[in-house]
Length: 317
Image 1 (tube, rainbow, N blue to C red):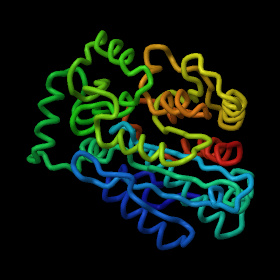
Image 2: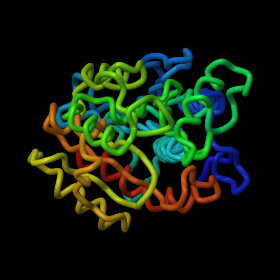
Image 3: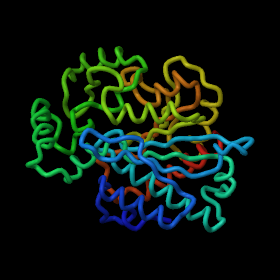
Image 4: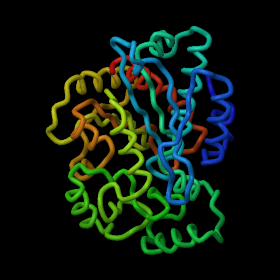
C-alpha cells in the first residue's frame, strides 16, 4: 500500500503545509486517530503529534506507549513521508480488520498506544524543500550562516533548524562532550549542521520533544534519520533490558544492521537522552543510503525495509 501524494516516483518531498494536509486527510478518514501540537518552531510552525491505540487507557492491563519521531534534520524529510505512510497503512489495516507486517492491526491497537511526531524540524525542512521565500529574513540569515561553511551545499546540505542549531545535538546526554567533539571538527557556531547550540534544550523544537517525552511513559522510542541502513540501539555503557533482543529482531526482519553508535556521534541525541534518563529501549533508525536529501522515488523501497521495524516497535514494547 502507498500514499498517493508521497508514494509516486515524481512526488514532491514533504513540507509543513503538505504534512498538515496529509494529517487533516488522515483525521477525516480515521476517527480513532487523534492530533495535537507539542509546541511551535522558531518560525511559529506547528509541531504536530498524532496518536492512536488503547495501550495507555486506564483499563489496559498490558498496554504501553511508544513514540516515533521524524525529520529532526532538515534534509531528511523523507522520514516524514515514511512515518506517515506507515500511519496510513496501519490505520487502514485497523479499519479493515487486516494485518500489517504479519501482525493483527487490531491487536496492536488494543495493546499499544502509538505517538508520532512526523515533523520535528518544520522550518529547516521548508528551507531545504524551497518553501521559504529567498527574500524572507529567515532565509537570508540561514544563507549567511551557510556561507561560513562553503563546502556544504545550500540549502540541500542544511540539517539544522532555521537558527543553525542541530536539533539532534540538543539533548542533555553528555552534551558537553558532544560540544567538544563538534568544536574540534570545526562546528563552533550556528550553521548548516553539527552546531550543538548554546546549551541543551535551548531550541523550541528540541525542548518540545523533551517536554512531550517527560509528559508520557514511553516504553520504547524510534528516531528516524537517513543514511546507512543501520539500527543504533545502545548509548554508552547503559544496559537497557530488552534493547539488544529487540534490535536483533529488527535486524532480522529488515535487513538493516544493528550496531552500537559510533563514539564520535554518540552523545546529545534524542535516543541517547531517552536511554540514559528513562532506561527504556531507544533506537535511531538510519533509513536508506545515498546522498541527502534522498530522492522521494526511493520511498516505497525504504518503506518495505522499515515497516517490519515499526511493527516490531509496536509489538515488542
